[in-house]
Image (cartoon, rainbow, N blue to C red; front, side, top):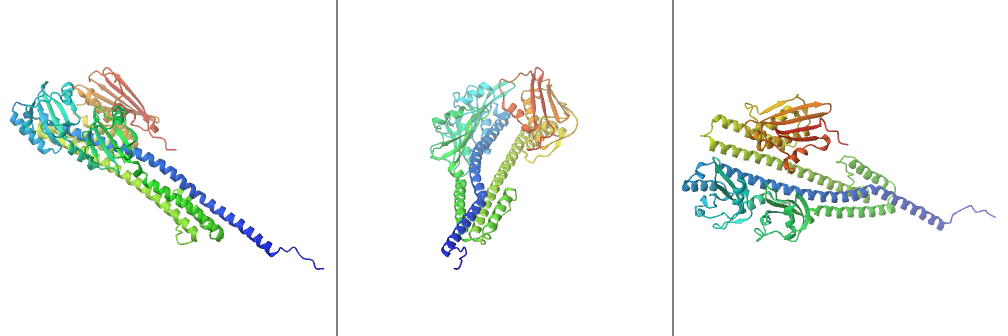
Length: 572
């Protein structure tokens, strides 16, 4: 009787092969899925990260846009105030010759495109002379800006105003005019709202973005893009509380055109009595992110499908190695090699498509990085434009001073004035610079106080050793000294002829100390509240420098102490 060996029947062997094949397919499928986990995790992480990042970006962009508009508004009204100052210095404007005054004011209005009218008004409120002579004799005593200018003796800015005779929409700016200590009247200039609208429109907005400027009463004076019937109307009642906010902020709201937007707003201040809002469409802002979400979802689904097909039809050679290549590229990219690509298009079958998809994703991420860099470059360009326009304004002030006082003021005084204006322009260059360099502390101090310093009058006394400051400290020290010098010129030791300032500095171990002492100025007292200048000084340094500031308001003048690390610790 023949013995039969342990032979597996063909049908059983087929079932065994099928079982091994199924296990292999499952293992290959598991390997494929495992290889896809990093890519999938990266896609999911990037989706959540980019969405959160984009949300922060559009909030910051909206707030930054409102700051830029506010800066432009400040610059425009500084120009108007400069015009009023220069005009009030013309003798014929404050004289008794009405015809001559009309002629001078008409000439000024013709040269300045943004002025609708400029008038000299008596303290009783009657228009004495004007660039539009038919306004002579008009009574504006009831205008709030006129009364405010009389009461404060300074500048006053009105809200939305429609001329009683010209029927032109303007924003009035008034300045009290004194001669020999006596009030001669109020000089009033009207800013054309259509010019103001066009000026803001030139700055442009992001797609589906709007800019709205209202006066202190909530009346819209500028709206871009223009909507018929909006200028001259009040904003919605639910937004009126924003006019009373103590600081800038961000909100999400539906605008008049029904679009949900993210708004950055700047509430009115004493120096700028306007509410400014800049908003972007939320849907437009997230359009690319949503498109990326669909793309990422599609890539994940496609990758899983490819893994399943590969597990069924392709062996180790066409699965393990291509997947390993994809993972290696992802790891290199995550490690900082942004040029890393799989370059698998057209090879390795379906797995090659996964590699190509990963390349597409990396290209998209690289494109977004370039967009971020371009946005930063645009911001830097805007900072340079601001510096250019500040220096242009100072050049206009310098030219006006030469033309106005050239025949009545000694040339030496005009030259001294010119030098100080140029020094002030140089100071703005320092404050607006981005690629700061290290500099000697004495050079930094001398450059910061140069606009207020005449070497012959000895009003600044500097004392301290020479040593370099790191780049960030150069900017911070320049900003602080510029603010202190400006405050001293307005209220402190530089506001009198006898005052002087001592600036001393030293370095001890790892810290640098700087002392600012004012002497001979008017009596000082601690402020009732923290002003903008104090905030600038207190927050000029990054926390990495462990700054310490102290304001000592002594009867003989402000004594200020600053201390900070000579080098900021390296980032963790």
